[in-house]
Length: 181
Image 1: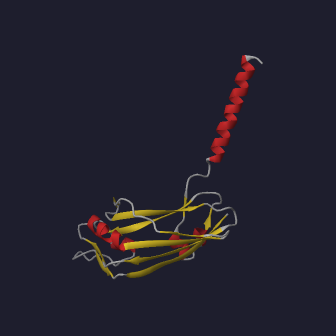
Image 2: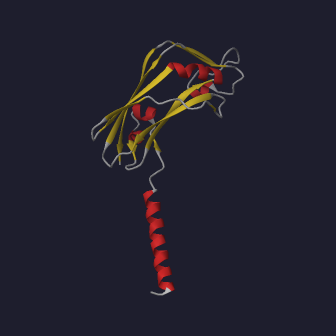
């Protein structure tokens, strides 16, 4: 075999390897499940791509970093995952580092990796939890957060922009079933 033929075979082999590697990696970007839209019945939120890693992102947000840091030790999130092919998994995700949001609020995010589903398979996600102690929610007037843009009454320019007290006890954020297409 001549050098040019070996080179052509090597290039063809390399091209085939690169092509197969790119095809194998095509579905590695996680698809984010929109839990609340799905739980509310949105048809678009109930369909997820098949053979793609699924991810649920959420978190706890407040008007100040200190309020987030005080709240997160008192929040236990529980996700019960029921796969149509069999199997139930329970996950209690940990909060990640607190981040400052563009709207002026602060959030302690968390993520739940849900695996992937084959076409036609479904996953039911039930999100419950417990507040282990009282939690205060406050947004100070110096914060740029806009209550009206977040389904709250508009701020009248006096006092706090938002204030709420949450008593200890269980919570149930609902159930969402997604199907892979």
